[in-house]
Image (tube, rainbow, N blue to C red; front, side, top):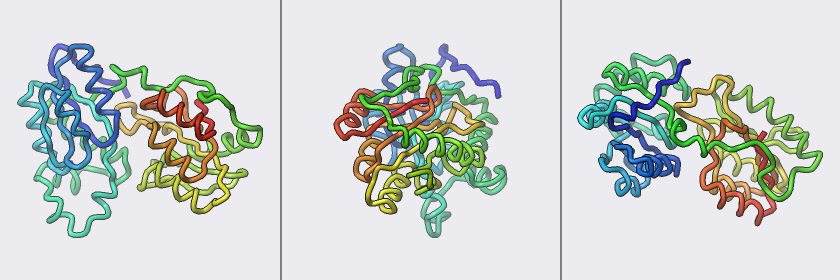
Length: 282
């Protein structure tokens, strides 16, 4: 798939979900002196975005037509996606049509224009809806390549020989889960699978591994999908991941270099060193 380049001659749109990635992107836009129109999702996006972005709108994640109108009125031709939108908010909500109040554009996409409810299918269908109004989706990492983790052992200590075997074992499994678009992370101990990430997200999968392995010392492997579209759902780790590992008793975090975002890298690595957690990018 040929990536769309960000049009720097016009305001850039940002669809902002949860986490620090949208904030990091908005700060980079301000540093570069580029105009930004940000649509922050209610209950998810960091309120700091309203102070960073020159143009900011709150919007329900279920109001697809409103998002498109905000961008068109702001003169946007290319936009990026950043941050997490928990799919469980849609799948797990009772009486969702009434409680979530999706607009007509979202209803038409959700019930008529997507293949299934896996992440790639849903997000590509949303991108197609924006494209119908002349809005092209680009990768936020075009402007923030420094967020992608570089290869190597990032912490003071590297994994033991047994932990390296668990990394190798978990890597193949995580890649297969990614190929199926189920999740991107697995937790393993002594080459046995403790937990596989699905709709709950990485941190919850880590907590489940800790419950299933109270002695701790397990390894978490998080990778990009073989078919990873770098415009969305790029694997992301950071301080919250390290804290989840520490609370659950995890020992090693292995991620894919150049295809994983490491947010607040200095703080995340410092905490990992403090807790004795090893972080590896391979």
